[in-house]
Length: 374
Image 1: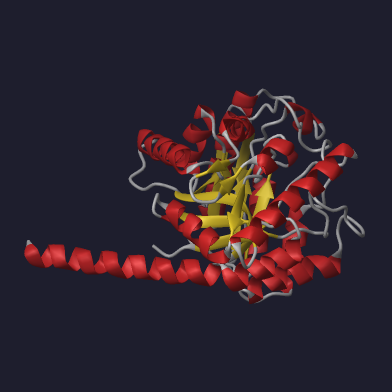
Image 2: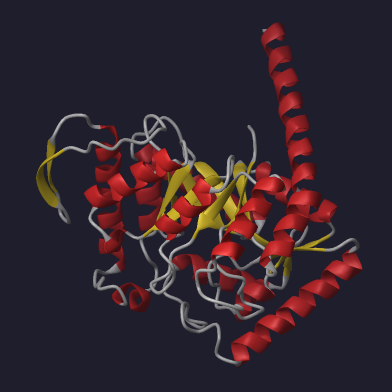
């Protein structure tokens, strides 16, 4: 199966290792970073969501208007708008981008961050709401007749949209989480299920959980699996590890200055995904071929925070190990956002694509031989 690469559509040049140099929405930098992803072989970029961050939807519209091929993944929290409104917004974005949109629905794993925008539901209640929300959005995208809805979280009558997406039946729905409630909701509703970078054995367990949840929901298909990493690459192994430890020192310096504590708790995170990353870090710094955990430990398992360290060839082979588990969407984001996006696109993506093509051709030959033998 073809592999896809997801990068980050940051709206400024700041990261865990460096403060931003300008406003939180820097038009020039946003477009420069997006165009670098498009030029260097990435498939899609994520427009992330934070309570005080620039709104990802207009940012995505801006990038869509100034790029040609780059696909867009817009993060969205159900607590910030009504599902009928959100469905129209996303359908409009899909029109603006000529069918390049996917939507990542975020349930929210931190009560304090959710309350910043008025969301006081418990975690399990949020997952139930997200599941209902996604179902409504899908129906708005596909229904040409007015309909009513009476649910636990949303009620409305006689709604029909006059704005439909280019993609049929609808844009892809992306979802993430590492708890039983997340598996149940995403297994039932998602086209793409997103995981953070854990060792191969734990990732295989999570993939199995997602597949089981999809089957339990009565699906005959399963979501595509996406896994996210922070690649740290250099021409030699020695230089890559030197760069990794320098990156860690920069993270610690930022952390000491209090710059990393606003959006994510650095200790005792509530969400299962971050807890899992910290548990992996506690088991050791290095796992499998190239997985390195100190970056996750220093940031409290904040989101995409485990690294893959090595030469481009080493990191590519590590990514292929995940592909062999059934992971077909690889998410990567460096610490120096623009330069790392270019380097990864130039040196890692071509290796992975070439090896995936070889694997797919070999499997096709094997299947043909089996059909001939039977």
